[in-house]
Image (tube, rainbow, N blue to C red):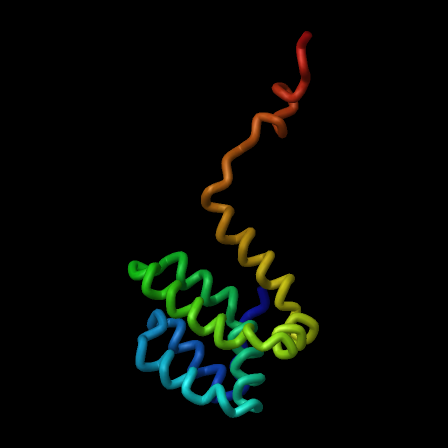
Length: 125
């Protein structure tokens, strides 16, 4: 994942919202402006841009249930619009980011497979 370089107040605001683990008042503030289509597009792109940071923060959080519920709430608001979801998928590589983040999150629970061990990978009959 690329290093985040904030170019707007919205990007900075979302960064600190994530850093403080999605306080409800900030989530409400950010979501209340979604009826403005220009803001919604900008916020969605910013959310996608910060997705890896969101997941890293979630993984370390002591309040992961609350935080994940707020992330889902935001995601539903943003990605229920099919046209916008398609736009960020194409322009912001949303699927690549999501797969990379999923792999990162699964790394901690992976176990070594005996099938990958050369010594144990042969069948002895």
